[in-house]
Amino acid sequence: MEKKYIIALDQGTTSSRAIIFDREERIVGTAQKEFNQIYPKAGWVEHDPMEIWASQSAVLTEVLAKTGVKSEEIAAMGITNQRETTVVWDKNTGKPVYNAIVWQCRRTADICDELKAREGLEEYVRKNTGLVVDAYFSGTKVRWILDNVEGARERAERGELLFGTVDTWLIWKLTNGRVHVTDPTNASRTMLYNIRDLKWDERMMRELEVPASMLPEVKDSSEIYGEANLGGVGGKGGQRVPIAGIAGDQQAALFGQACFSPGEAKNTYGTGCFMLMNTGEKLVESKNGLLTTIAIGLDGRVEYALEGSIFVAGAAVQWLRDELKLISDAADTEYFASKVENSNGVYVVPAFVGLGSPYWDMYARGAIVGLTRGANRNHIIRATLESIAYQTKDVLGAMEEDSEIKLQALKVDGGAVKNNFLMQFQSDILGTRVLRPEITETTALGAAYLAGLAVGFWRDKEEISRSWRLDTQYESSMIEEERERLHRGWRKAVERAKGWEE
Ligand SMILES: Nc1ncnc2c1ncn2[C@@H]1O[C@H](COP(=O)(O)OP(=O)(O)O)[C@@H](O)[C@H]1O
Ligand SMILES: O=P(O)(O)OC[C@H](O)CO
Image (cartoon, rainbow, N blue to C red; front, side, top):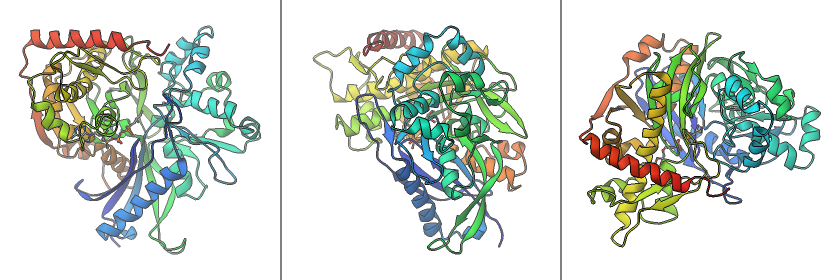
């Protein structure tokens, strides 16, 4: 049967998605399922790995059923995932030894403080892993599991336990425990991977007390890793489909946005907000609070990116909906924010899990400042959306300094870019054009491209570049003095939120 489609699995922080693309990058069908966020203590965030797997395999089945696409028509499958989130499981039973510790989780802040106190280690981490010492990354999360789950360290030392980020966990499940792999984009988020030598870093394994036997094999982001059995009933029948692409969701979005040349950048507005700029084969060290990360691993070589990681963006909108109950749907924020002329001096700093780039403060916590008697719910809603744009502005400023490139336009994607108020305010506060493409599911598209390239479904990056299509362009209409005035207020608000929990 003719191979007409690529399927992408996009395992995000709040939901699992499966999307089928045809050769013209049209979305043929989508299925999506939210899953539980577990908050055992203030600042802690977990997911149940079995629920991640169940929701991901459910949407895979659902998208095939609802589109009528046959598994024989699928050329390959690509995987993209929330990054850093850490799963440790028993390789014999397939059972996780603990819940997945989510990237947002702050429980390892004290381990980070201990690492920072070790002579020269922070510098070593920056130089060799491209990261800062922060609870965000997988390394301290693995260490926490080994230190805190009874018997885990002994079992890990006996070679019985495996570690994986979510890509690794899903591929292990999809291949019935046969394949234990990851790719350089995910490996570069663990604090255990040397982004210069392109291998697991001996010193970091020692410092974090993580046995080498737990770590997956690191393969290219686009190659065949194994096969998944699709479309069978009760474990029988079905079609074997190659799993042929892996990338962390932010790097997948960079690829899906066709940011292939040095200096091209995108910002993805999901739970958090992640801006990545391709720096090609050049590894740029940040002096302004950004990360150096691997953009992609192709044909045995890697390209690098500078990254600004904002921990809370769309999640602040969910907070307005679920905790404050100011809205019933995320999309309502656009209407309410537009009902007021400005935020009336109110600033929301959504530092719910500390602050990432460029501030790096594990102990910051959320704040609403500038309240007066006239402040109403629309101002708070508006200030929440504005906080996403301000955080992005701070990251872009750092990126322009580090890269010495002035960005002419910012390509955007992710769930929150549907919000026209946010996009216009973003352009206003940056003073830069904002470009929203027709396909905003760029994360899934990037994973589809990687899988498609591995099996010859798409020819090369040039073919992909030609497919990028603009939907809307936003241009700034704010005068510089106003931009600076508003931004000064934001910086003051951030100062108030810093170090709160220390
Ligand atoms: N119209 C909207 N305005 C603002 N935020 C939105 C809107 N629609 C969705 N969001 C936010 O976008 C996020 C979902 O985007 P998505 O890319 O699916 O995230 P993720 O991959 O991180 O799970 C949610 O946090 C949600 O609150
Ligand atoms: O799942 P998302 O889209 O919120 O992305 C999460 C990031 O990969 C965390 O680094």
